Image 1 (cartoon, rainbow, N blue to C red):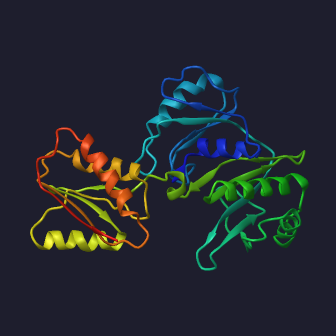
Image 2 (cartoon, rainbow, N blue to C red; image 1 turned 180 degrees about the vertical axis):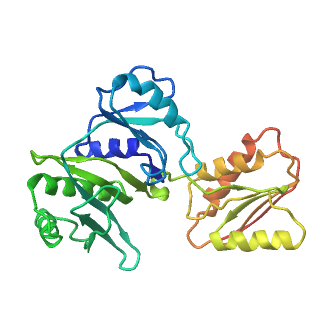
Image 3 (cartoon, rainbow, N blue to C red; image 1 turned 120 degrees about the horizontal axis):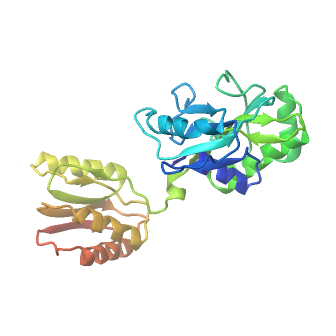
Length: 310
């Protein structure tokens, strides 16, 4: 789950990572939120907002209303912003690059750092981290030196704070680009790109695809669900949706999925299906189905076929 810059910076502040002063701007905002000059940024999930017209500089307070209206009308990769971020304009600072992510080859967290950040960042030095060791202060200082950068106390503090956020919040990507390093040594997060693990950020979330058929399908197992939908279509059935609830979910998750699946108009049947469960509690998931079924209005009158074992 990607966070907008605004939400990402709120998370950074939770871990005492400094940011420039900022205020959220909505369409109905009339009063200039900050003293000019400041930056106005579209709060969309796409990258390269500067190049795509999603960032403007407000040099005078009287220009705010006009710039705001224009920015709300600029789509970024097809998405119009619902909110904007007004942020203090930082000048005369060194811009660095800092990010934590995962390397799928080594299956370890990695830190990427570069002495030049911003929209023109070309390459960064990347270092794998031992999950058991984490990132102690001496290692953070060593990484900075190996990257050809000065290990100032404030920069080390920022790196350690971002690592703590990355670890504690189960983040998949935590990127600050740029890190503004001021003349007094302080480091400010000029941007925040944060991606959370869906399974942890939204424990009850299950991907749902609405289809054009008339047979509701509640399947367990990623591969098994696709095989069963193929079989259903092979014999002339038309699935009304795709969703699967594997992973030993609590009854509440299946309850909500059942209500969503069975609330679709025009259904002619429902199929609850899955292979032999090795670790999924069949009683728990079927309890969730029954609870959801009892809440559906109007009460379903079509056939319901259940195939589960384990």
